[in-house]
Length: 366
Image (cartoon, rainbow, N blue to C red; front, side, top):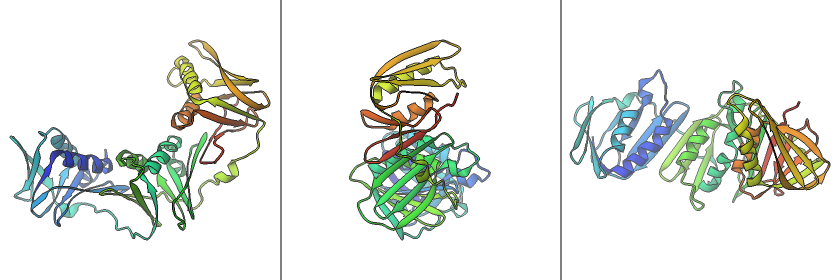
């Protein structure tokens, strides 16, 4: 095998597929990137058996072939090469020569035959969404995933398609994040649970273009994302019955406030200065007339601050884990936020009039 490609194209491709290289594995071949130049395309692939990524890069194929090369050392080498064309040549079964200007590396390689290829996905059931929308959906929901949770349902996000509507749900034991999107076409009905880790890695690859589409294909065991010159395949989380979040959503409330998002986020951020790592002190929100008073009392000290609000309904005193509120406020794009309360022990709902997003967070019950 002998190929020549521009350094920047090679670095971009390696960075993309490296997201599917496991940090720890008992199978050394999974620590490799597959370089496939057996056709007229230079194709890079990595696969950790749960997440697989394949991307095509520009370049010239002088001699066809295919190798598996250690991802970590290969990535570090190509990243530090001069900004010029890179030649990768294999003359025997054990070594690859990487040359760029006066820099020359000889690197051990593995047999491509031992590499675990991506599963073949039937491109049948699909939806199409813009890269911008998908990136935003992941950004606005993934914070509610708990990767360390033993309950697998809480480590993934529900993708539910009903005709022209897409609903994405992430939740842990204390909060729920829901995003509703109107699709451009009328599709079928699909319901899958996608690992949060896979979605976070996909989000890093997406360019986020409004006019750039992603085709998402669904099967019983996998989900495939196809965009630009890249495909990402992820195993699904087996789930026969995801939580019915519709039953958790209520339109009844006794107190509704509208508040400036930035003012509230900055206020809570100041309050957290008094919280040591590992401390679980809540912030108290007291809503009266035209202002909300936020107070906190810790071993370090105390703080109180008032923020103007528009209130409809009863006065209320309620407390929350400040991190949970900050996580939500960070991902909202609106300047004004509407919050709905029933009582100090019931969940708080943060949502817009159109229902494009709904966040539910449980209070700290004293």
